[in-house]
Length: 333
Image 1: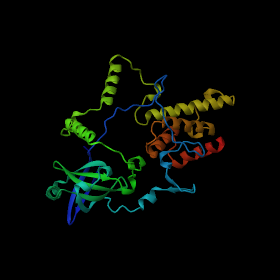
Image 2: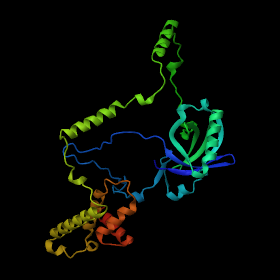
Image 3: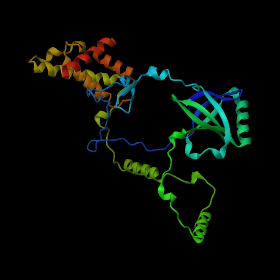
Image 4: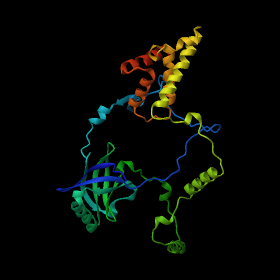
């Protein structure tokens, strides 16, 4: 397992350095959306709803819409100024009886591993929780969000389970439950008898996900019987950066040839034209090609995309790379 967080449990005057590990992981068969006819992957672009232009990841901010319909744009600097006093600390607020923590509040579960130098204070906290049969209510900041959580003991490990905030739990409002219902003693006795007949100690390992198992078997059957097809051409993923540069250069070349052909110039005259000297229409095509090549990488960092675009155009200067895109949008409008 890989630690996702490092910090310390502040237990009175005792400080316990720990590492945090995800204790659970959902198992699922990953399926993609594909074109039924040729198996091509369905891609999604991030497009601005105002000008219809694709938006680079680095140009995306978070916004909040007020009740009156106005938009508040929040920048990275705004979030950095927000207080997170428990960013590297699991602050123990109080110890409560275990039965008082409503399971409805429980969210994600994590394991706490002590540092090599913190084995004794870790054992001390673990023993105190076991002996008193209590949970420690704590505050912790994970992924830039402050959460309430509890510490409890599972076998020899201290487990941290994040909790929902009280206002995140919805009230059950079902008027039908307020109506009087008469249950006869014989019926209650029979229901209790049924419960006793099915009584057992809980062993989750005896249960399996029948749907996922059947889906895996179905896929394996299709593979074994040869019901597969070669990946579509658009699905090919070349080495990092190289293939995308070639694709962009090919798109630029075709666009230049098309533009010169429309003006009645010979195709041979395009060979001496550098990407930086291409007409505005060519650079618009380059932008479109860049959008197509990035369709499968919406979450990729913006700097990597810019570097590929620069490599394709032969321009090593950021300012020079941005200017043609602005001129292209102006002409397209």
